[in-house]
Every structure is written in C-alpha cells, then in structure tokens.
Image (cartoon, rainbow, N blue to C red; front, side, top):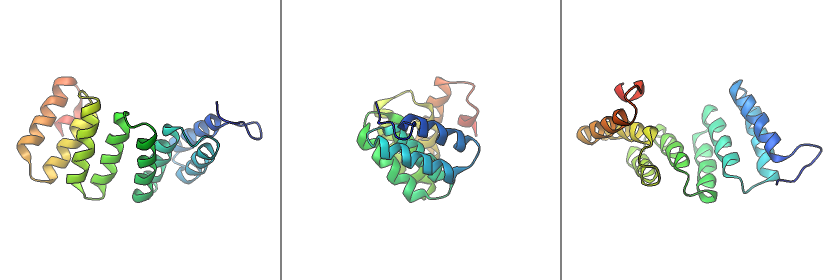
Length: 150
C-alpha cells in the first residue's frame, strides 16, 4: 500500500490523473501522475499513464522514458512494449518499433494491437508481405477489428 500524505494516496493521484487525461487536461494529468510516482515509484502503471499523458502533449521522448521505467518495473507486461513501440514509430524509427512489437508478441502472441502496429511499421519499412501476415493474424483474432482493415 502506498503512503498516504494529506489524506491522498498514490492511487488517488493516479485516478485523478486518469480523469484529467479523459478531459484532455494532459499537463494536469502529468502532475498527478508525478505525485503518484513520488508516493509509490514502484508502480509500473503510474509510469505508463504518465507516458500516455506526455504523448498527448507531444513530448514523445519524455513519454518513452516513462514507458521505459514501466518496462523496468513490469517487464512481462506486453502493453508497455506496444505503447513504447507506438511512440518509437511516431518518432519515425520503425525498425526499432518492430522490435518492441515483437517483444509484446513474445509475451502475448494474440495481442491485436501489437500485430496491427507491427504491421503498420512493416509497411513503413517496405515489408508488405510481413505486414499482410500481421494484419491477417489480427483479423483472425478479431474479425470485426476495423483497424486491421485500414
């Protein structure tokens, strides 16, 4: 359990950050996540949530740092690798992003998001046949996933 300071614990700050994130008040969300991390620096989801808010602010390198901390704390959580790969792809480093998506798929082979995002990065690296394979696998997992058809 995280320490309570002034009547609020780390989860309370995290939840407030999530609510602010939903309201697109990203800077305020980052501040809440920072407070949650200060109270409980070992919670990977706090770092991941901060990364998401930083991404919304366009602060991609800082977002990637937060995701890196989440991965250090929770290395077997495939969603951290999917999110990290997505940020890396936004930075235009698709080969590196593919490595992240592959790590996610090693942990969770049926991750639709990892397959779709890997497919998109493969398209960017001119690997159409491998991209088609990723999209096909994603469709087999979820035939109603519109993103796999885009």
